[in-house]
View (cartoon, rainbow, N blue to C red):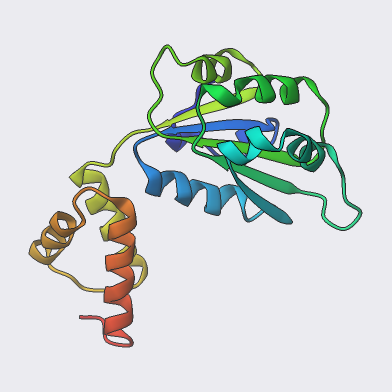
Length: 187
């Protein structure tokens, strides 16, 4: 099933166990994973595709085993490509409880077998992440300044957006610097 990045909420993701996040916007992927998935997880495991492919047995054990103390596991596999498809297809057929698996990938072609699998399966969720434009970054910066009650001119905001070069992670870093610099002051 295909969802847009703004359609993801807890109601839609609670039924699914397998997710594919692909696209150029790394910052937005990281933001959604930390805001939605990591908050609900008792344990978070990070893997790279090569680690999964070289140690398949360990990966299967991690996914299918249950713990007495930690109920909800989150497994994040980065750098995914079509090579991991057979393992994911096998896991999708098995029953595992309270474990969510997120595959993170860069841009995938329409011909990608991994992307096609996630788009057509009803039990999986596929989310494309497109690059941010200046308008999106301005909205993020304005909402940050509004929440923190920071007065900033539009000219300074535009200069900040230009400095970030379209990258959400850079924008968040710059906004954090501004917040730390200001301290108790609001101008």
